Image 1 (cartoon, rainbow, N blue to C red):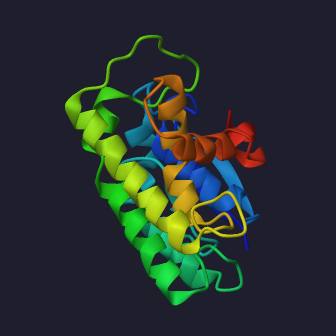
Image 2 (image 1 turned 180 degrees about the horizontal axis):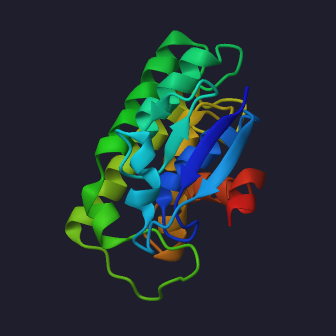
Length: 202
């Protein structure tokens, strides 16, 4: 049972990182396929896999197309109930799903002002008020998860879950742009920076 994951450039595609991590970090068998996201060839390469138009894109072992990271995550949860992709505790599981969904659809100011770039760092970057608001929201969500369900490990829900997968690229942004966050948030960022699969992506 092997999945096919299609990703863009590892240096710049934060969503590709999420798609890859949700397979790699949980030891779900997969093959990696690189498409020309910045070479302008990716739409032609993905054309046989409608409705896919962007990366990441995943094919199930049966050949079913998942063309969105949230759809990918929910499909893996459904297909692999034996793997702790989400916390087992119902309250923690519900909160994890909320955090994943908000990352999937929110934090646009942070995304726009601080594009994912893992090969450079910026000195003296000045975040806008909108970016600071996004950082404040991140901190409140991370703190809520950690205070309610984070005992026993460095991750949002103690053990590594899909919630951490979805927030992994934010760790890059906080580091590469030198964004102002609390010590607790920086500790969470540091956990990502030293996580073996995250380091493998780098």
